[in-house]
Each structure stands twice: as structure tokens, then as C-alpha cells.
Length: 291
Figure 1 (tube, rainbow, N blue to C red):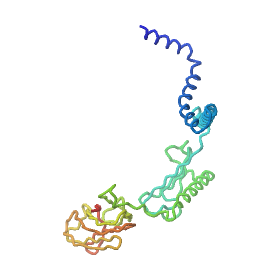
Figure 2 (figure 1 turned 135 degrees about the vertical axis):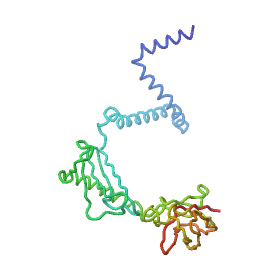
Figure 3 (figure 1 turned 90 degrees about the vertical axis):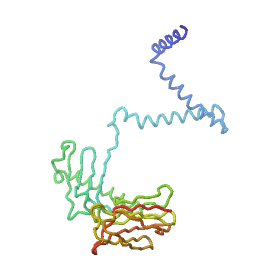
Figure 4 (figure 1 turned 135 degrees about the horizontal axis):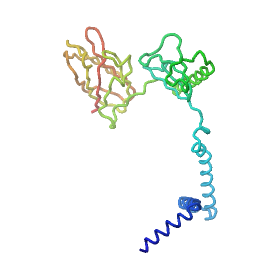
């Protein structure tokens, strides 16, 4: 009965004084979280009064900065939101080509050059398209010749973005090398999606750009392209760093293992080619296992 009465009294107290309680609760929370900080400052040589004043000042300053930065956006998301532009560019190849298969857009406008993801480049002058997404969300009306001001502004923004991302490294478009020979991933599977070459299509040719973490001997399991494995005997040619070798392979072989391939620490390019009837094609996958 006593605890029930206390609970009822507490609820009644909260209901009666609910409008004036928030400042006290907020102050108690500040005191709770700032007290350990004040203790730490006091241990560094300040008096309790100076430590409390310094911590309180910092807490008020942080709260004020957060209020100025966040509160307007919470009250009105459109109040001071900085306009943003998004750029997307994607296509095959070892280097990004200016204006090739890209899009730049803001809240209302979209400038695009859909020249084809699967192509390494495009021919001739770019054929830009400009759409008013607010009034034409399905992008049916190309306004590139009707709104020169918007077109030039977005094109200039794209050029600035392209120049920026094209100058981040000395060899800007060098392939990110696949690290092999570490305990974190052994064996390492190398697929056509990883290689540098003309495409991923059957009978295409490519190579893998590697970084050998530690010198040693490795076994390389070679998996041949399903559906296009030569029926007659063929040759498998291997070249990696200073090591080159070839091996006769019975027709129809789906996979084989090249043993004890020497690798030295540092960059390496791994080439594996199937040679049949004087024609070359790449392999399907290579699985590298360090011993």
C-alpha cells in the first residue's frame, strides 16, 4: 500500500508540474554527464569552481553550435539545405573518358550522355540530353537546346568534377592491385571480373594485376572457360614476373594445377592463355594458393 501511494503521488506530481520540470531534468542531465569531466579537469590543477565553470562553458558552447547547425533543418528541412549535385559515370575500360556515359543532376535538372556502359569510348561529339525532372519526371522532353544557361552550368560542374577525380594520384587510372600471399586470404580466387582486359566475354583475353605480399612458391589452379574448352589438345601459357612456362593440356580438360610457381614480393602481372589452332583466349578463373 505504501509503494502504491508513493507511485500515485509521483504521478500526480509529474502531472501538476510537467510544464516546469524539463529545465530541471535537462540541468540534472548536464550535471550528471559533466561531473566526471569536471573531476578530470580538477585533477589537472584547477580549482573546483574553475573546473566547473570551464566545463559548463564548453557544454553551453557545444549545445549552441549544435542548435545553430541542426535546429533550422529540423524545423524546416528546406530552410538552409545546401543544394547538391550528384555525378554518376560508369563504363568499361581502363580509363574514364570525359563525357562518356555519365549523368549529373540536382534537385530539378539532369544532364546526361547515355553513350553506353559496355563501350570503351564513344565516337564523335557527345550528344547531351537535358531534362527538367520537376516537370518531366519520366524524361521525355530533351531541353538541351532550349535552356542553354542550365546546360552550361551543369556541364561546367561536370568538367570540374571530372578534372578533380582525374588527378587524385600520380598514375590516376592505374589498376588497384590484388594482394596475394597473405594469411588473410589464402587461397585467392581470381575471376574475369578482377582482370584487366578487353571484356569478360567468352574467349576474351585479360590479365590480373597483383601485389605479392611475400615471396614464395604457389600452386595455381587454372579453371577453363565452360562451353568453349577446346576439344583437341591445346597449350596453356603462363607468364608472371620473370617466370614463364607452357604446358600441353588434353582436350576437354576443365581444370589443372600448376605447381611450385615462384613469386617474388612486389608487383606482378599474371597472364594465363589458352592457345589452340594459333588462336588465344583467356582462362575462366585462377586460384592461387601459397605454400
